Amino acid sequence: MSDRRTHTIVLAPPAARVAAGGSTAFEVSRFTEALLFIDVKVVSGASPTLDFEVQTGPADDEVAFVHTRPEQITSAGKTLVMLVNIGSWLRLAWSVGGEGSSFTFEARLALKT
Image 1 (cartoon, rainbow, N blue to C red):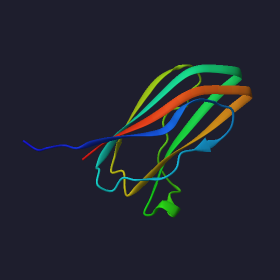
Image 2 (cartoon, rainbow, N blue to C red):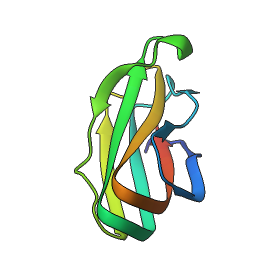
Image 3 (cartoon, helix red, strand yellow):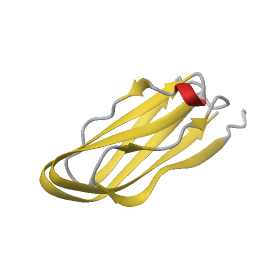
């Protein structure tokens, strides 16, 4: 039986966001897969949209390659994204769209060897 190791990273602490943003880059080379947990608590504004990109790269200053784009979010709820072949570095970027839109959310990454 193998001993799988896990590690959890907070990519975006709970907060209201009205514009594009992103997490810092995290070194994840010792892990092979991950689960991304996005928990949207509150949504407001006209035609609100929230888009995410999981970005990867070979170094912390080269994390600009899109790994995964989860489905666009338009309402409160929980989204789970499974990630494999995650590379050496990861970060999460987001973009808020819509007139006067705001999303209160948090995002965490559970990494596994």
